[in-house]
Image (cartoon, rainbow over all chains, first blue to last red; front, top):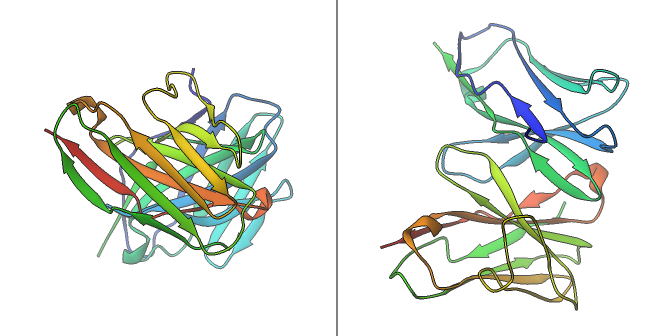
Length: 108
Length: 114
């Protein structure tokens, strides 16, 4: 079983749509959680950390459910520039473990 | 957050040869890591680069194949040894100090072995 699992997608949505991604992790001792964004042929870049209480950054909302061991990312009012692969990342023992990524295509 | 410069950005190598990839961080970081990303797949952790001591390798990766150096808190190298076409991949370094802030990545090395 993979440490971090995500639906690979792709999610094809029109501009302005709301889209949500989920991710599950296997290690209950995981300490911190992140969403990274990776554009084609580029390195991953931190999108946001995920806190137990849930957190929001503009159009992006991240939530963590420790009991069920899943993380979610909600994107509101999708923009063309949101098209990318979104990577769920889980940390334990100071190491990051990556999900396989969920591809998002936002279309005009 | 730290800025990481990685080089080379790409290379095409003959099988049986070795390539050394370098990462330079603009500030001292506690942790540095090396990842591999196969086409269309996610990142797989190769090893944690430990400053002044041997790297800690993940299952499936060994020092003879992927020797790593980390002489100080701002620099690390990964060597891909005795390369075969199966080693064709993108190799990325990553580093940071505060886990809570996430780690940043170098821009990656796209390796093709022919």
